[in-house]
Length: 452
Image (cartoon, rainbow, N blue to C red; front, top):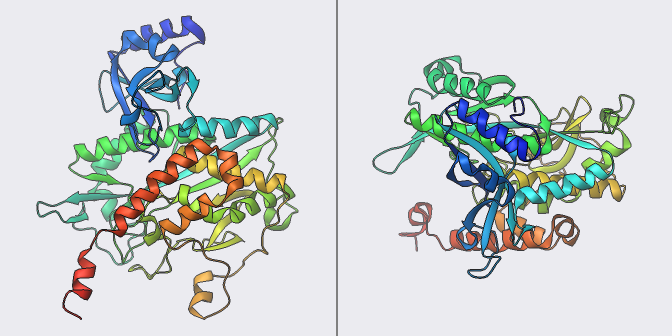
């Protein structure tokens, strides 16, 4: 994410303050992530940076979703400790530098902090001398909310029947896209492409892969920039997975690869089936084995399962991974292999990126440890097979409730991730499902009010 700002230790803090002051920075936005994956934080004077690094910025623990902290006592305070190498001036917020925080309580790493959970999983990987590299593909919608409460695509002219790569829409929205380009470059992103996706109002901005922790931090910073820029242009940047029933939804695909201590790829084997090594196959098998439980972490909203459905699209195409299968460059499979790496197609942009990556890694490592074998590769279009009435691979859960029960029943994955964060996540998300289940929709009135 750009050049490091500072050296380690106290001298580094002093150097960071000096450098940031020279750039006109007066405040630090100390940002952490709640259990839903939503960025939270506060502004603090730059002069308090040492306190933010050593003790942490203080927050009321019970006021934050998913901490599990009490309302009194020494562990009632949530401390977000600034990770000093993440400090970056925000180009869209003059005078403010952004910093990522790890969650602590009572002087100890907080077991319900999703970033700490990912760091624990990465520590297990580091014990093997391995590094996980992740390329994240952010898809999103640009929307507006009208005075009557109706949501719509922000660009009213964006209505092509098959809108992928629509240059006219890109040109009409060049103000937003150009601001995103310039801000992301200033934040150290290595941009690769910007395109209009397969739904009206949907875009994708791709940037270079990174090690897993930096990739997660970078995605949170990407979303922060996108929210700010969209608001400046009178639009809403939306990570809602499936806002329109007749259009494709947004995914957040993870491109996964691992290197060993010598920098050699662990998954790739040009002579192997699908171009994968036995370790690569075992990792993929772990993903498929735990896929139902991983749905809860990677597709964590009611709306997520409108995307993970066998549905027709106005554009004639849907890329939703509905069946537990693996295939070479097969976008109808849950795991797509390409160039010796794995594309995990389950996640959507409503996920907590740290929790989703932690669960993905935990499942893959279990596949390696247990020497699991994936199913035979799928070399056909699963949607065509489904329409033809052919026998299909096992399906993913059809709703959030089923996914949550799969996670609750998966002792192996919960043990690997840690009971504190799993318990908090399940309690909050089951309550979310209950609230949804008790909601009466306009669809129900239209279908039932006069019919009986």
